[in-house]
Picture: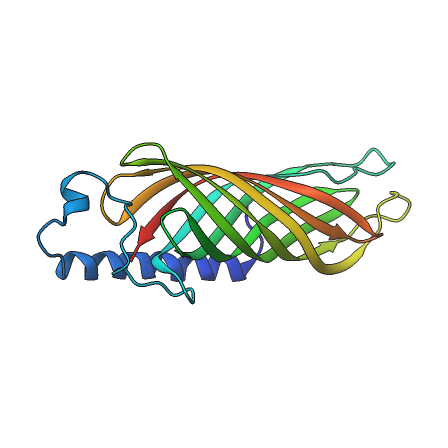
Amino acid sequence: MRISSRKFQFSATALALALGASALHAQSTQTPSSSSSATGNYSAYDASRTSWIPYTRNGYMGLNLGRSNFGTSCGTLALRCDNSDTSGHIYLGGYFNPYLGAEIGYINLGDIQRAGGSTEADGVNLSLVARAPLSPTFSLYGKLGATYGRTRVSAAAGSGVASGREHDWGGAYALGASYDFSSNWSAVLEVNRTRLNFAGNDREWVRSTSIGLQYRF
């Protein structure tokens, strides 16, 4: 199990450092509990919170790690064929109002071994986010958008699997649940589907299931 992209490893490390620095800054500048935190409604929409996404407030950033599942063919030869690897997602988001927001992120879906070679996929995602609070600390959410994905496929001759690199836009959506355990931190569980273009004009959905942490500014 590994995420092959060094770019993702670097980005994940940078985000983890940013999360830690932000948390320390928040603790050092923390004021007496607000009305929302006093009532346990940690994720209540607060227009005074800033965001790095234009025209939004209540900004957040997050890191998810999980497993991907590729729907690609194994080819015609009796060769090793995996369809799953470690996946990762780093992202920034913000909300236009208490229920609708926007998000940008980088997703790495891993590197699977198949058809005598390997298949890698990653991309940049843009999505709208809709949130439905079910309690002061628990919410369901959905995402709908598009991913500019990159794929790299190598395969043995005669395997029936085309080799090459592709990059294109494809649809993406996700469903998830979040639990707020403080005024700044949330744990999330998410299922994501991303449509990618592979060599040989092979368009397939890749699914990932992940858990993660979000930090609200």
